[in-house]
Image (cartoon, rainbow over all chains, first blue to last red; front, side, top):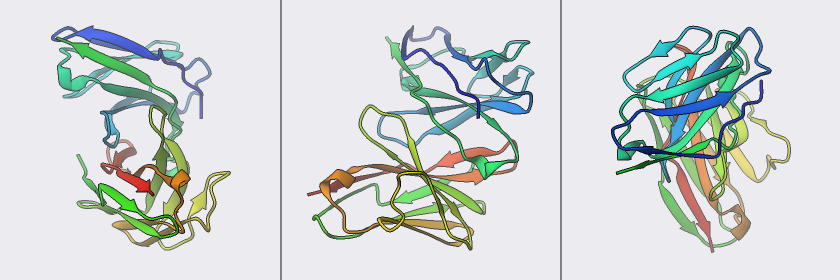
Length: 112
Length: 116
């Protein structure tokens, strides 16, 4: 699976959009981008995933650049409860039955 | 989303005893589950892949005799930490592989193990 690079930490004001970047410059054509987050002392939570098109669900939006070498997770209106570690993972689907390697992620702190 | 239940949430045990942690997929069947451990302020480290009806696959450096994994049904995987020692104290997390809708992982809430 392709390696990802994320900034170690970011701050965001409550109510503002949080934009979390992820670099995956060695991504292959059949690798998807997945985002998870982990609130302190809890298990991670699935957020969103995509291949090349931008995706949106009730939690967030995922913007993938045209060359697919990077992506941005957008939380449109961050709340204090969005404070968590956000993990960007790249993996091929239909192989290894979901085995995923978690990097260090980005610690997002939403401030009042 | 799908629900994965992990039990217990926390456990304290004496050195030398064994501890069993359960991971259940409540509303879907999971042929594959994963076990991770996490130390404070660190990322998740994959320990093993649990496959229903077959032997687990362990990551390099993980002692299979130390961390026994059983996946006897499509909804239950267990991790037994045998002869636990203080260095086994950690946060253990399971996840279940959910195929529909994009091959997502759903995680349990984690188990904090403290070995005295």
